[in-house]
Length: 419
Image 1: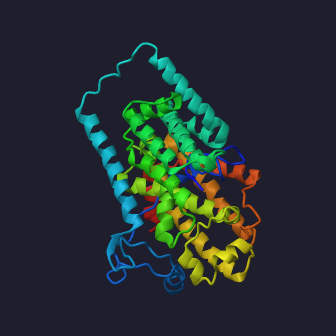
Image 2 (image 1 turned 135 degrees about the horizontal axis):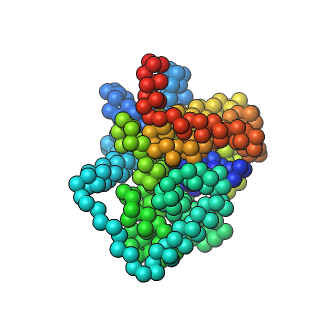
Image 3 (image 1 turned 135 degrees about the vertical axis):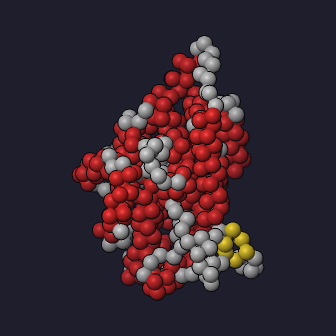
């Protein structure tokens, strides 16, 4: 399974995108807005260990929050996946803040244009746009609302993410080795150093020179591809969370600097990035729940092993693909968690620049409906593929557009009134 932020709103069938709405090709789109790292160090007695999700729901009626520190089997205190990801968020947010300060102090001079290069660069961006239009139709339409510079940059990011994902999910995936991914990472470093290998690389190389985009989320996505080559089970949600960040949450961190934060927003940069991360996590969890049967046929189970055991389920139950009451109860808890991340994501979408909100709202509303369809299928995600009908998608798009017109200040005021 690969990244779901830039793959979500492909065509009205939704099969590709940049944080917006479908299955395979739309995973890139669906990962745009991430998670709030709430509750860090908030528990005095529980801060170093994970508790049963089922027990938490039964006892407190709500989902548990991951702690910043956990203890491994040897009793050593180690950093949780959540904290590792949060450190990347802080670094990216600081990069944006630094650029804002430099824009105030420094008199930026126009770029030096070498004869002939501008035409080639335009051709490179146009090609990225064509790829986006082919594999993420609905999302592509949303990008047309952005300024030309932001639009082209998002296209370039989408294409790089898609090419990276294809390394392990494409036609030649069976021939991909860790060494091939190492070479891809070296190529990425050259790209950031303004040494692109080809036309599509050149578009992204130009993008990262114009926007405060850090290389780490790109490297982390490649790390997610490495994980797919060597790992087919996840012991707990901490491990799964890190995987979801690698293959989906990273897209949000790549994209927010380009999409921009609304000038009138009072939210902190970190909170907007956390929301971007949450959408990515939510979309990837949705991919996982939708594709349980498909992944099982490939010998993969992207579900927390400890939570399966607590529910009285095993790998054999997944491979047998029989819907039982145990499975239904397990799925209800997993779907509740995914919806929790979607809820966190909502808090950040309104803070984006207005021209960027519509495609992100479309992603969130469309992808979240997949969870509804899993429930409508009586939790049979072994042999039935949950998909959102064309009619429901068409109804969601105007709703997403309406939400995109709500300004951050209006959103804040309405929230205060509800309180």
